[in-house]
Length: 417
Length: 121
Image (cartoon, rainbow over all chains, first blue to last red; front, top):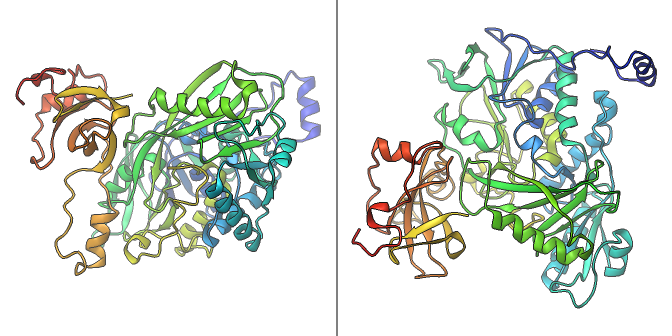
């Protein structure tokens, strides 16, 4: 693997870019690894990268039933922010934002992280109270967030309609300037490349079909469509399929899987400078560097693994987009798609050891896991390597649904669930 | 959008008339104040989240307003059958499951009763 640099770019430009080679290896699976990660999405690849880079554990395999980054990593709306209400959430999401800030350098791969600001709109008195509470709570936790009046919101995002005649007029906004977007595929590719360079095996088209346990109940490996693989530590990072994989070890999870949809418009010239989200009318929007408007819709109401959702869900979101940004009313939408998100009862993730020795789980990110990718991988790698959670993910246990120590972001999340 | 057969109205209606109400056949424990934390967790938080046939509750909120149950395939989103609240979990035949699976030749749920028909279930 060749390191990217100005010099390397110049040299390859002279050679018609024929010398770059493959960005990661596709090895045959070994019969045994120190750690097996189930799921080669952003979180799984990040976990493998930090296992190798920070804990010196390089005998690691990342298995995926499809291709890497082909699930929710490739299907989200790439929004990054850390303005969560509770201390535990602010800590983990801001840990991620701090890692995002140095990620392209750390991976030697441009993940196109752009801190263009995430603005959340308030449309009524309740929104104002909730968002101001967030602003204050965030500031106490060292997370930047500021309150804007409608004129300031429009100054920050000129396409925004702040007319009092709107059906849901904008009465204010909360702005996190350190928030923004990143190129989702590049995140998966960057972690895959950096992990592979450190000796991690990334094995695609290799579905885990069973989890082997020894006489003492501890994990001894996994069964896959490419044969059995022994490992004393298995980390499950399977997003929407977490319930399915965990059931292979006999564990029932506090999870439900729902379809979540997104869509993009035809590409246009740069016209939208930031990320705007609205809880009340339920829409979020930004513009990719390719020029497409990237729009996030809601979840369908029923559980499903179909990776598709109802048209009325995205139609409802577009109603809201047209209301907030009248200049987009004649824009054509190009593509829409769905991903399967695993939702916990308190809408906070689970990053923890499990009752099964050697089995670790990183799941329950629901509708907003992409933003946490580096932080999630970082603390999950720590949990696996030390067999003990990092202080940041220590509250995100599986046991909290028994003890009642929930991290109840359900009402505090950015969009209505 | 799903097309859902309400077993009370005996009519297939668009999903917009209905509200999903979670996994079905979860019995609230008697004496809930006395049960253990583990039993409460299992009742309140833990879900099957099956990839395959799911049994779930729906409420015909913009129709008759009543709760009923349904068996649906969670990969194809096809309904196998809907049935009234209080009725036991139906035994599904292999053919029914195969027909509802992706690629299966499913007929609309409750076809035996006529999708829009008034025939007795």
